[in-house]
Length: 119
Image 1: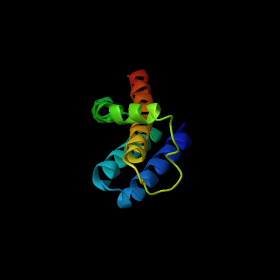
Image 2: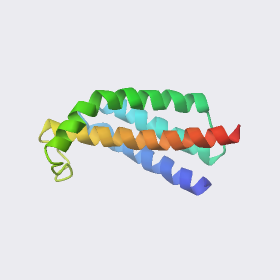
Image 3: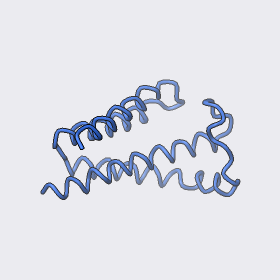
Image 4: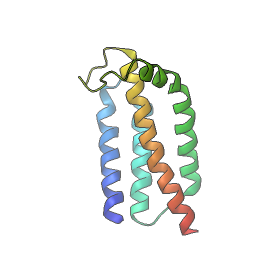
């Protein structure tokens, strides 16, 4: 599992790095770097449950703010959000953000439950 968590950490670090051209880069860079650090710690057997809880709460609250936009995208018939890197319409940016947060939530949730098994 060490290599898996190191790969996850590297991917999220890459996610953090490429956020520099996002309209709101700092919160995204911070969140992705947080998940990268959590995965890196897990690679070396360090699980900090309280930190995972903080990250999970942040993701859930942030997701809650984006749910209406995600539902709007679903009702539109799920138009392509990957056609270009530039988000020409708001639903593209919001849907990408929702999915990015959901990915962070999944990783932090897995780490939280792995931490519970360690105690």
